[in-house]
Length: 181
Ligand SMILES: C[S@@+](CC[C@H](N)C(=O)[O-])C[C@H]1O[C@@H](n2cnc3c(N)ncnc32)[C@H](O)[C@@H]1O
Image 1 (spheres, protein in one colour):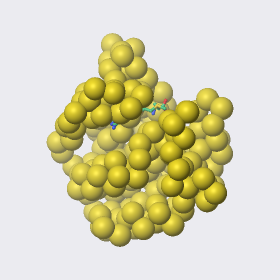
Image 2 (cartoon, protein in one colour):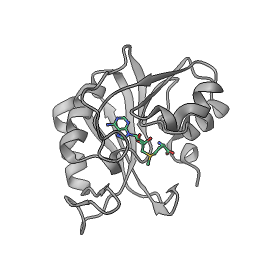
Image 3 (tube, rainbow, N blue to C red):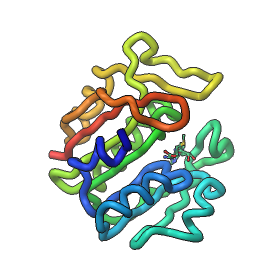
Image 4 (cartoon, rainbow, N blue to C red):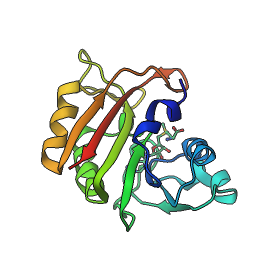
C-alpha cells in the first residue's frame, strides 16, 4: 500500500513535512490533493536538489541545520518553519533520531498544528528492540507505549499506531498518528 493510501484520511491542505529527503512523498501527496501550502523541512539539501529545481505547486523548502549523525553530522541548531499547519508528517524520519530528539521535535511541531490537525510519522514499532538504537544502520525502534505516552505532554492524542508494512527500501514501516486537541 502506498503511503498516501494509508495516511490520506488524516491529511489536511497545509502540510509540514519533516525530513522530506528527495521529495517523493511531497510529489505523491501534491499529485493527489490540492495543497495550499507544503513545507519540506530538511537538514540535507543535496537530497532535495531535484525537488528544489522542480517543486510541486505551493511547495517551500526550509533547510535546517539540525544535527543528524548520518545526514548532517556537523549540524548545530534547528530552524522551525513559521505558520500554522493542519498536518505535520514525516516518512522514515523518526527512525533516524533518538527518543530525546523526537520529544523535542514533537514539542516544537505540535505547536505549529491547529486544533484537530494531525501529526503522522512512519517508524519502526518493535516491542523487542524498543529503546535500542542500532548504530550499524542508525535506526531507532520504538514501543507502542512510548509513542502513546509521548502525546500526553503536547496536547496530542494518539489515534492510530502500527499496522502498516509499507515503507522505503527494504524496511517495512509502521505508522503513528496523533491529533492535536
Ligand atoms: C531515510 S531518509 C527519508 C527521506 C524521505 N522522507 C523519504 O521517505 O524518502 C531520512 C531523512 O530525514 C532527514 N533528517 C534526518 N534528521 C533530521 C532532522 N533532525 N531534521 C530534519 N530532517 C532530518 C534526512 O536528511 C533524510 O532526508
